[in-house]
Image (cartoon, rainbow, N blue to C red):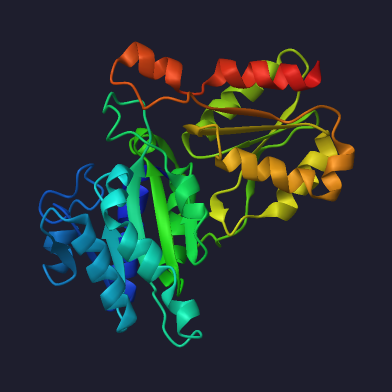
Length: 325
């Protein structure tokens, strides 16, 4: 295997899908020669040309609307929003149109498009460029929501998302863009709706997303020195969600901690907790479920305050010890 950054893995997936299917095209602000705000599409404009890699005006509504419309007439667009925060400007196109068309037309209309967007704090980008809004999107019937944590998963999941016949929101933690990991050579795809156990364990299940998967693994390694074996589970796709794997893990360990960067209230972790409460795994719990999440404030610009806002290895360790107490 090669070691690629998450950004390189996504770029490779886009290039392979543009090569494979002439219906695929990219659309977004500065994604051409500039390569996008984080350089993810670098080199694709010169390779595939302006018809396949389309720069747009500064209008998220236009980007999402053009993607939905072109998908309805047979294209397979991959739209990029510069930051997930700006999805607020395109919610009508995504939530009221793209997510509902297939249902409202009895399955006769399809919206095979991907909406890519970087998210997350940790780069001192302040409150309007640092949010984690995945829970909004998971709440909308008709949307699929993907959130990879490793370069290999990012490439394989993006290829599956592009080939899917539904609107898939593909969320990329910008703090992970330059983090390297092994990526297989050759053609492969990671199916949507299949979780991955990143680290097996017997004492506590930690369900973590994106960047927090790495924090959870660090916490698990620290706890292992004390004889506590933590199972780290990465759902990879938030919807469809692999509930069977989560339930099986909690039945094995008897304890659950959820970790995500978004604020705690009404977050993805609450949904995981509710799934366990409504399943047979509830009878296996030996302690109340704990949630580790971002602080309930807008993301601070100050680096010291931003660090306090974010979940981290130490907060995960404290939560694991609490459910073991």
